[in-house]
Length: 69
Picture 1 (cartoon, rainbow, N blue to C red):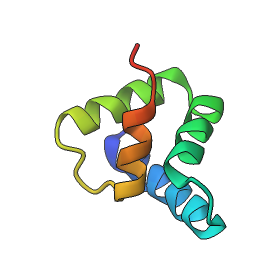
Picture 2: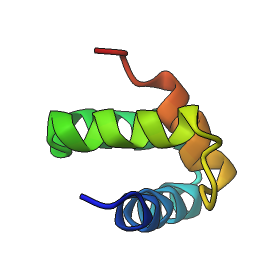
Picture 3: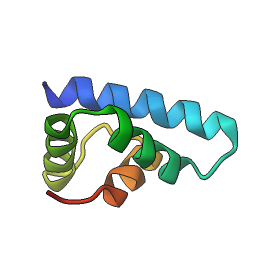
Picture 4: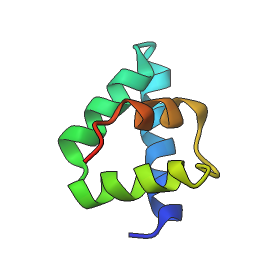
């Protein structure tokens, strides 16, 4: 899956959890672990390692919470 699509999806998830008033980064990370395929998580981690262009700050924080393979 292309990084652009993953960024868009992660940003949408971050927007949802920010609106809920919860601990958004942790909630986003939990969502990514539960619902994203391991290949998707690996790709978003690689995107962040390359600078993370386009990621919302909450999404970036969430990705930083993901376990590394």
